[in-house]
Amino acid sequence: MTAKLPSRDTVLTGDHISLEPLSLDDVPDLFGIAGGDEEVWRWQLDSTPHTEADMRALVEARLNDAECVPFGVTDLISGRVIGITCYFGFSAKHEELEIGGTWYARPYWRTPVNTEAKLLLLRHAFEELGFSRVMWKTHHNNERSQNAIRRLGASYEGTFRRHRRMPDGTWRDSVHFSMLREVEWPEARERLTARLAAG
Image 1 (cartoon, helix red, strand yellow):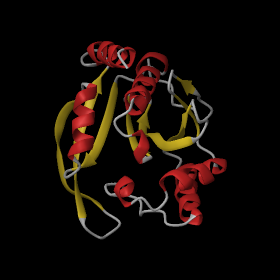
Image 2: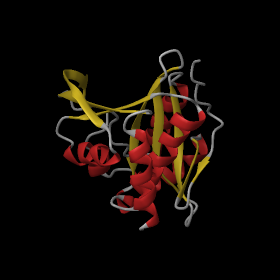
Image 3: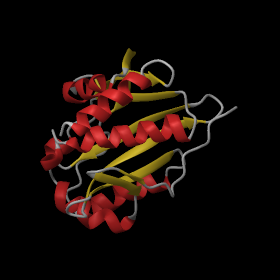
Image 4: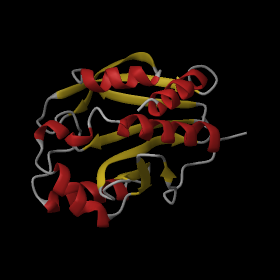
């Protein structure tokens, strides 16, 4: 039995956020909350968007990528779109996909947003779509991202050297992590659920 591919019509709703299909209508919110913020974009493979047109091009690139299912991350209190997260590299045959292309506006760092987003994405991938392996890749110098992935309960798999060229021309070594449905997921689901319940 193979997994079902993720759909671009999917909406995943939690207590703090909703993950909704990314749209060009999200561009003003996204640019208004994170445009020009170099720290948000420091480790991204996209250049910092300094104009609304730059942000529109970034969103269009996600929408035009056939191997990407992009979500706009909506804060349920304000109703504003505060970031993006995506499914990438999915294979129904091999029951694997990647969570990536993730960023949030800086006011939402160290809040329940990332924990809930990952719980929604993981639960959907493992329990509704039938995937058995979820992956993450991040910059070798991005310790904040690596620590966040480890806190999810993912396992380190290795580092691909000189793997991706950054917007400034430097090379990224990509640190790879994964989570398996039958191995790490049961404990990770309980831990993430408890973390959100505790506030």
